[in-house]
Length: 393
Image 1 (cartoon, helix red, strand yellow):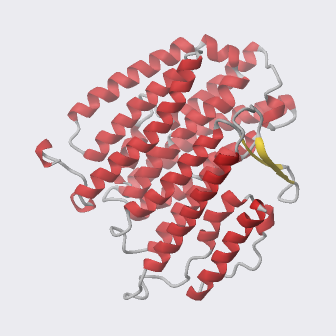
Image 2 (tube, rainbow, N blue to C red):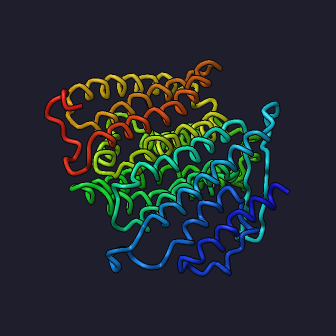
Image 3 (cartoon, rainbow, N blue to C red):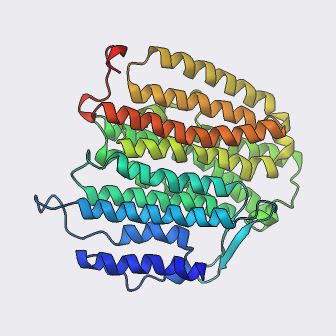
């Protein structure tokens, strides 16, 4: 009954939105996609086709309202799943498998780790939409489409149970972010969007090489099967290098954080919220999914190097916050410092450190969002968040 209800909710939204000259969605096969991913995608497919630039007096409030209601419904669905989740089990739950999507199996599922990241995503998305409720008046349709598409892709990262699909969705968030910053950013938005795209794309190529290596060795990309294997030490080292480089860029650590600062400063408020609260947590989630369970020997032997990188990053980011006069850049530096703290925690090889790393990562998602919202309430993008004196805060 619950899954039927989940499928009927986006269909009901289709009929409601059809009054606004929406896209044709008759060919959408809602039965082949998990509802928690489908609901934000339904909002993407059901935007009105007229352009606010072509109709100056267009009322864009219905567009924003539809997007907000879609994200709130998805939040309620995630809360229902959270209440039904059995925390006494360490197995994947709500597992669904689809064979008809492509030439490979499409697995979806939740465990005690991913359920919290799903909740974080569904909570932050309505906040991101509300943060730019009045500040963005042009290309509103494009903005809400990008936000809902980002929600869908981020949820897919946390729900898939296949390492290759994890990489595909891990990288698929880059084009929406690139367009979001390029369309709605500040004066230097093009440069910032290219920094974001190129840095993270080039870093993730090492992740792709590692995934292909594991797939060629094991003959499968399924998480459950890979967790039962034991790579030899030399293979673990090579895989560790590739995966850690990708996650170090996404965290980011020292010398690899240039893209984050530019992206935060130039991004619109909603983009900064999603970037800091959810996108930066992909590296934390990836460490728990790929490095710790698959490469235990390599992670133990290189713990001291990760500690060194983390401590240097914390010191560098902390001192950098003292010299910056840009509010969003200050929050970005603080995000880098906090990311290094939970990076050290998850590699501490202790239960307290791992639990603390997860808790700090989730808490930072809410704290950083609140900081960006506070900055957005007091200032406007017209001044480029440029502060000459701290008394202006």
